[in-house]
Length: 177
Image (cartoon, rainbow, N blue to C red; front, side):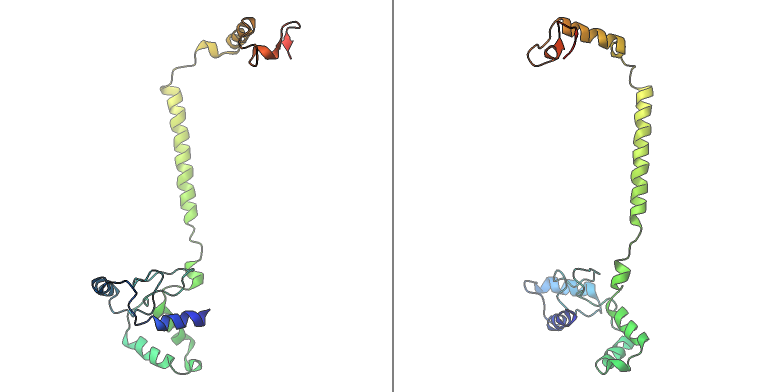
């Protein structure tokens, strides 16, 4: 997989993406600065993004300095002659972060959860303030005594006797069916 990606990167290193106009390429290259455009990238534009689904960014992360040029020449030879620090410097010249670094959890969910809970508690406080200071008290017909009287009146009038409330009342035994 890595070999295939490197081959694609080398093939596309110099080529301008298909469909790109000369003016857009010039403005895009102006944004790149002295960084090398090494492959097509995930959208054909010369930009740098660390993405796990497309691990090869279109441009290198750092501009080419004399130190990096020297390391790139040394890289063309035997890799066993490179020290670990030189390999790391080459990697950091091409990439900003390793996979482990950019896929590591950030803890952002804690802040989002905290704000969500803060807003939820604020809305509860607003509800109680509205209930106390804005809404009028419930009418007296909402107490149990008045509701029972209303139910008895509906049964006496035989409201909706086919499939409603009166159909569930046994009028002969004076109880619910």
